[in-house]
Length: 439
Image 1 (cartoon, one colour):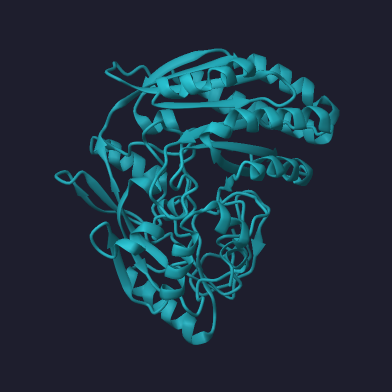
Image 2: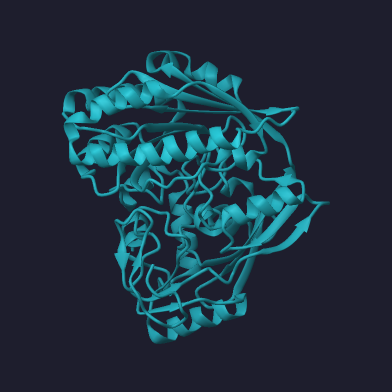
């Protein structure tokens, strides 16, 4: 990760290994005041500012050659309000820490993504989401947030205070300011019954609307070069809890999903011709399993095999066509794809640049093992996604620009106008934001 000491400079790399940058200086503020002072100092010195979380984005959204603000010391829970059912956390708090702290208090977020290494503000600012019939992304669960803006002032926003900032800053891409604290809605801790089972792709696509409508959280993984998927349904349960046994959990989550999977990736990278065979074996090796546990233990799983990812949100009704086109493309392309394609859904929300903004969405994510050439596959997939007016995840590989986003986001102009107001001199600008938001 390079040096993270305040003021020293080192090379920073993201988790996927595809973005490297050397900032002019690194700052690790221990308070909101220190952060505000660092922002004012950067402006005086003519340096750009970017806050960086855990580096889980595959885009250069957090990269800067100016001042890189590190979150390690802005962590912890400020307040749990059992009356209002909210939790307020410092922006650098890892999701893992938040989830564990809430569980100890008998509370939980309603929904979450499938990894929890990210910081709360990194995850929400890029629109991180899980899958849900009614429950939406992490950002959609935000009740209030605190933001240091370009002039060094601290702005609190919610539906009541600065509502126009609240409408945009929940998925703010780091373009409106540096988030310092987030208030999430929480609910009493509940149990989820998970059912994972293999299912032919044709059946999943034929029954997709029904599977989505019948389950609170439905997702599936399709294995390219095969007609096989693994489906996962999570629904609330009255109990009792029946966690995956430690041995089975280790075998399936660590050994199969990380250990053997990693070995298969290395083999596929070295000898692409064996990929279809690996895909057939791995997609049929999965057996059905059911377990019941608290939400974060069901929603999230460790991801130790490093990869690069592209994910697009397409209108939900376009999902079946999108996947059929993706499969036809892989089948005729001669590409060797060794990573399953992940499919999830989200209801429409009211956040300006959320990938589910004002439309019910289905997410299709394509992955490649780190170090494997991914451009040909991602380019062909992106052509399919954009033909369906897809919106790329802000933290995952894509080639879209402001002109494209102005067409697929009805509230794009609202966001850029707010940015003009809050950051007229583009203190929080970097190459990525220049491309996706325009000058």
